[in-house]
Image: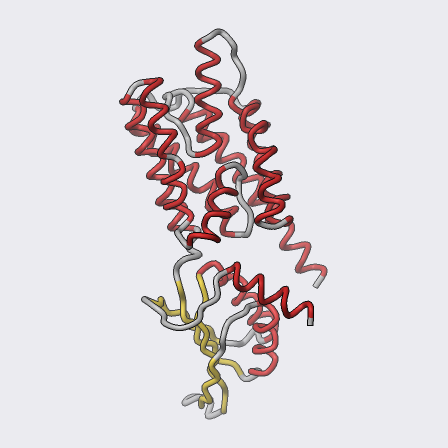
Length: 296
């Protein structure tokens, strides 16, 4: 168990570092030189830094990213969770430092390419932390809070939140800059939704000969109903059990890890689920159930 925890922490740290590097490159190599504005706090920080630069005050975008993330970090601490917030603030701090250190270079003289690649890289930098249970800070934390209360996807919420950045960019720096910003933010939101697919559902069919142990492990890690179907292997001529459960894609890693931990030889078949009817607990409902169970 200790090795597993260390492995998980190590994986989170690698994702944290990779996300910060990718986001800093997207900012300083594509978006900032082309006056194309990123999403959320990064975009707001870019606007402020650009306005100050026009007045002769040159401060890196990274300083403003760091400044804005302090109050948002407190919001995440109380509304989302401590583990989520600690990793998120670490990403935000590392991104800020790298944005200050990495020199600003105009890699592409083509504004459309800069908008697309800047948006795609930003989306990758945002989505993988969200996929593994934390974020890059800033508006990501606000979007996660809103997702819990509205049920909308993270990408859609980010698109709505960032509409104001486009309007400000258009008024202050010209509507051409605003149009390229729209392309960048849209590319980012599509990448986020394709990677961080928490809202998509899967049906898992788990064929195992150790059904009791697998069920116990799944009940410990997931709050999902499990249907037990007796089965018989046509080739092995041995009795087995098929466990059927519906999960969100966000829970896929947890399910696979739990099954393989108990029964490495288990066969897992995953099927895309178009729609479901009945009780399907979201994260907030699961958290309430865990708290209620812990009190008993």
